[in-house]
Image 1 (tube, rainbow, N blue to C red):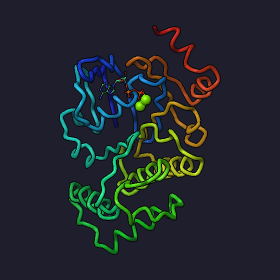
Image 2: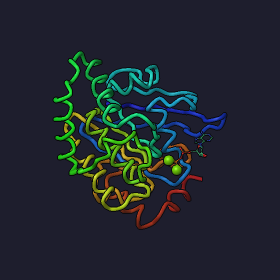
Image 3: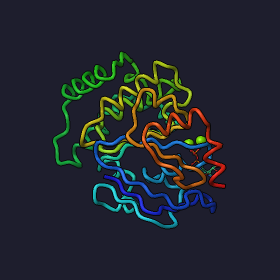
Image 4: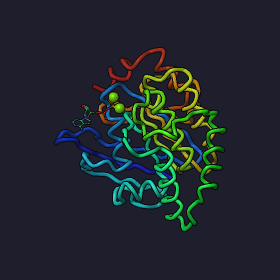
Length: 249
Ligand code: ADP
Ligand code: MG
Ligand code: MG
């Protein structure tokens, strides 16, 4: 599904990613962990196509396409979803209109007819049920005045509506109460199918109590310095990041 080979990238002239290699297959959940400032968000943003980053070298293939050649819109329509560490507010645009436009754009890209208002509401209800969301958030402007937890729930709801092939969740757990954490985890777990994959970026082990990753990677100073199974997350919780840092200075 996703193949990253020796990806190097800089922000404002500073090299942040120094040769990332990662292979993700359909059906897998990968956790990317690591201390603050390691480049986790940089990697997520580059995959989503955010502008401020310069790719210095390497290759990224997503579903057989050269991902780095695609615009952010085409990446999204091709099935890539990024949940931001800090979701943006869009005052004046009701969530429901935003979602309907997104869902129908994605359908159009696949050659499908747009959903009618009735079909859209039905889909929305089904996804709310799936996530056990009783939220009224869909009637409000996108993220406007939402609490941190509400923004994250909303991101997961968008993800459920768009049914991406590859979802990248960047620190979706930071600052979440247990209820929001549950929604995030249930969303990821409910979305998991043999055809989809998820990358969970997290600083803490806590989210991984609810989402069981197939693989855990530690990113440190722009490189993946250790990979393993879910036991690596427990090891990190127990020992912290110092033992990783020591061997990789
Ligand atoms: P993480 O998500 O692992 O905490 P980031 O990818 O956010 O790490 O940051 C990696 C490094 O890149 C940090 O040193 C950070 O200060 C720097 N960085 C990230 N984005 C920018 C930016 N827009 N401008 C300048 N420096 C940045
Ligand atoms: Mg950070
Ligand atoms: Mg980050």
